[in-house]
Length: 424
Image 1 (cartoon, helix red, strand yellow):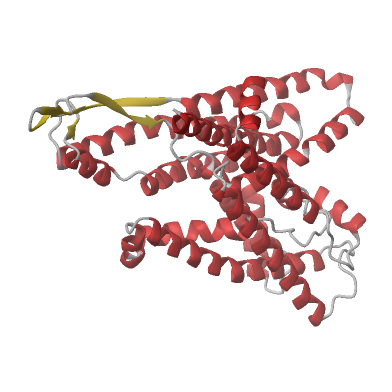
Image 2 (cartoon, rainbow, N blue to C red):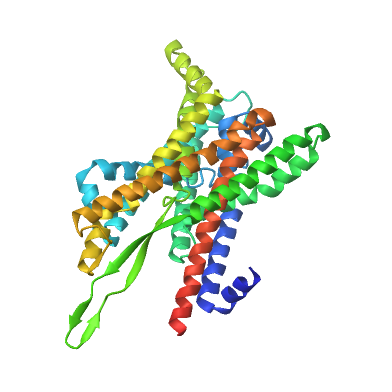
């Protein structure tokens, strides 16, 4: 590890990129501690501590909600907008064609995603204000219509600021910017979590802590295993004679990762799982008895651990296949192989190669999706033994942290490798 850090420091381009990313993440953490005036922070922390759904949101946002920061929504609205547009890309023909136009088309879709993020941020900020205003504890002080609009605009601007920072980070090719912002938020909460555990340590719960550590280790090993695992598809290139020279005739392989979607299915699943409960919170005290019944039933359903675990597993499984189908395009791979004179031994070029690649990826992805889903729900299954909701938050956070760390390390390693080739 020290050798790799030394290499990063010696190569100016890589060192500058890493330092810029670290500086941007520091800015994100500084901004997350800027509160909006007129909020009773003590009552707010007490309210979040007693609300499981908002407590999870607070952890994933890096504690920005408990300070009612100007970036309290973090990049949540942007993630929601991304999910919407990826679904629309599969349904709307014009967006599907746009996604096939390469980098230019992807830039347009990203622009549309940013536009959609603004109204979603305004809507979510208004919903959060309404939710806190309905709480039994007095959280928001002197709440006038002008003040509501001001808070909505400030929070929405904070979200777009984080999206901009995330894009700047992604341009440095030191990891995905949005994922790193979430990663930094989770990591920043670890010292406080350890401090809380130390202060509330109960010797009678020793085996519970041992179980937590064991599950954490198993989760880390599992995430590393499925992230690093891949199947190599052999590819041969036909010999081509041009004049007196012979080209081609070499053999290589196509690497198919077990979990090509990375951490995205986890983030998507968490966002979807939180949405129904968040909406239901608004209608618990509604005037209509029907709405109150629906809201109470929904909250009770999501508090049922069996239902929660099954839905969480299914969402991760489904989003793994969905996102892989978006980023993996066997038709393009088959066309490129055919143009370059490459073929898979025993498989005809063209449509047969496309079908073979698609079926192979589906089989590999099936086991990867199951493994990722099992690892995700493993901490939830142990919740009964722990007797606390902390493990639920810890399991989800641990999955994100490990996957983002691996992805970032790979991108840095690729920059180091490219620099070595450039110097040859």
